[in-house]
Image (cartoon, rainbow, N blue to C red; front, side, top):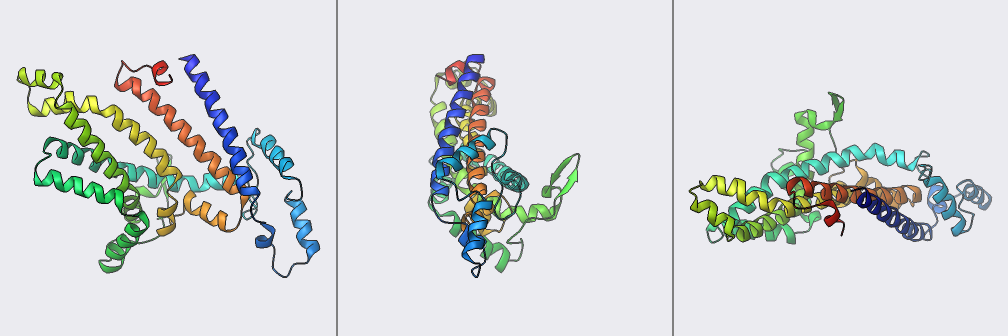
Length: 325
């Protein structure tokens, strides 16, 4: 266990180091933030003074070294636009993105697993084929188009749900969230559905494949031969054995939902990290872009580790030393 943790920690540090170099070179070598941040009628001297104040007059390698030294102390830079810690700006937006991702994951579990189970148990029925056809659409339709259609249908035509923004968060039991109110749920409904459609389609197909394979196994035939009810066979024997790949996918997709909700947040004007990164790229706010990318890498690494640990909980035969092999 200790060796596994040390190995994963070293791998995480290596990934973060390589990512920092790639991101720094890709972001800091392109464009000049001064041309955007400083007024167009500013003199050349004013531009040079601003460049010196932001440290942009130094060679690229020196800028990277200063960034690494500060990063080791927990400082990922200071935002050019907000004039505050880049990490602090991102953490202010993180709760909104996390809230959106968790609701999307809720829809994925509530709809993906039951629909996939039904399609696996009744593959030749009309409902089973319809579910699989719907999953293909979930994979194929671009999220920006689906988002626009959701806004057009439920916000513009029917007027049932708001199309943009997040409700005012409230704090209860020490947890601050907009989901404590019905208004909060009405605001998160459309963006979370748009974000979850692709994941629901993936879980449907994965669950269906697992069920179809498990139903042919000897332990299922033996359970039926003992006279166990269909509900018990499916709930205990089938579901328990197909949950490991499903949990793996859900864990990985949670990281993707948090890290790459850019399109959904932009369409629905959701005030999360995705919208922040788009605005920061447009304004060439380099510290925000670098801090965001490094934070998302860290989140994906952490979630992968949590999934590995969950393996051993779901199946004692799976050991951490095997997961790390």
